[in-house]
Length: 348
Image (tube, rainbow, N blue to C red; front, side, top):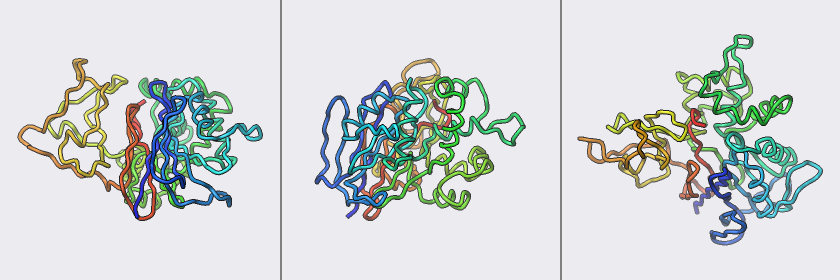
């Protein structure tokens, strides 16, 4: 029997917190409690740290909202652990699916909670595109050159400003070093987790280049920051998912919520029955045209008729963007795949 579960705890100020629970509790169900939505899924009981576990709580983009994160953890039955400064559960383990930082006002506290839980064995953490961006922004390459893997442009400075302002001094360097150790995906007993897209061809390329699923050298980070390198494309797919050109299909460019012009849209690659551009392209309702008007509903490309565009191996389920909702699909054999799709590495 094939099962999959997708959990997203969107804890940004603009959305309620959500999570996906994977446990041995019978059939899927929904529940709302204290403005925190979560979904429970049946699962094979895994083992973690040599302790019998009832399952996992998969938490998506926290983006610096520590108050909502801590409320969510308490709702899910986690208790403050004064010894480590985080939270623990006697029977469950949390999985943070990246994008802990940027945007929100409590980024340092989010990092304190997540890292302490990871260090204590009560949580796993995978890398999101925002953690990758932070590492690239902080990495001078070659050393002493004054050049950074993520250029110090006005646009990038603005996107990193909140993180740089809130996490300073030794703590900044410590957390950047921690980000560098985060895996790009997890393949656990009964659960697969990636920030955006579970794409095995990209994973094989990453493993060949890195010797595993983590960055260990500046040269590896440099390759993953170079658009001409195949490693860049593989990491892009894993951390943000595939995209499609709108201009190539006769559609206008758009401006994202940060006001930046874009001509590529993320793909609903988990939508197995999508056959047209309108069904495939994922466009946020906050996007606008060059004239500042709401971006129009996509039409079929002129003179092209229905468009079928294959996304890379739709092998896991995902949600995308601040307004997304959990979705599921059946994939793999005796595996659950949990993922949340990240914004573009170039997006805030």
